[in-house]
Length: 455
Image (spheres, rainbow, N blue to C red):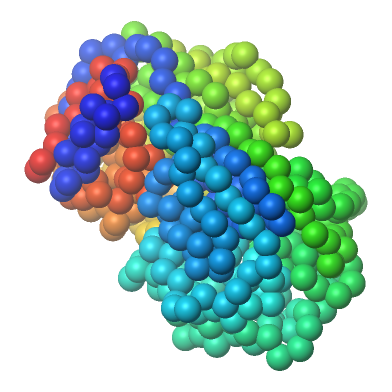
């Protein structure tokens, strides 16, 4: 499908709700949209670096475009210089200036938290705000270490809007994270670039390391040392100046999860998602699917900008329930909604542990998934930090209209479930899907998925 035609399909189908229904075999190969986590970081570090960087493969979704606009507000030049399949973004960075007006980050928790850290390190005053959903999400775990470094932070009960400013110069800190959080870790490291002394972050369990990898690519010197358990220490000396580099953003494994899931539950399907990030700290979902008996393979493996990349091939599979350990949560935290839907098609019980983070995402994802699956006739139970789904190894009943709570992953997960349900599954709102996977409808249509729009 040509890009312009695909965009028309996506714009039309995301205009309101959507409905999916049982479809024939899915087949073909699609390119995964750019990784959202790396896209945010590429923009921020390019804006901090002195000189011109070029970014290819950038995810042009709402969340990332909010970060791009924030970088412009700090004085960086950010422009798209070539469109189409080979789109190129040019970012000319340097010393930041205070924005003239509050920064609006929409629904992007990653953008808000990372940009807070970068602004703190750059020594500029800024006010951060977002939509109703983002205003309800906790920011205190980022603000606390920033305050320890000398940042003055004004907020409403640790939530947006937040205003950051400096009383004195930033000081390095020694911080042990309460939980494995790439966003908190990244905010501290970005702030540490502008601090006096060496900042040391102790993460008790390994989580996404894109910031560390990209800081090194931009010329920063940092060290990573394993601790005596499953975590590590990260040290970064303040006062370092970043150099511009060119970044090729790989495909997002969290977005690739949806066409992969569809292939597993729709009989006789064979789907390949090309150019996907397969960093081991992001592949817990695929490891879990293999534990369940999924026919999944990583092909054409290579390295791009220090990150492992490959093509993911998935074929229809008979799945069995498993217990997912809590320690796997950091490597698949965004994939639990689609895993829960897949589990409804598996034989037996799937128990997912260590999910407390899902209570404070774009929605309470545990509650939203449970309600949606119950409405589709699935046996589900949950607790504060766990979710249990009992499948029968057969298609789910479906026939429900799902409340998405303006959460893109809830919306996409249930549309995937409807592709192999007895009766169609409808979602109340598809507009927010553009925050992470703007080509979702067009890509799924290319594979043969049956999704209706304009409901």
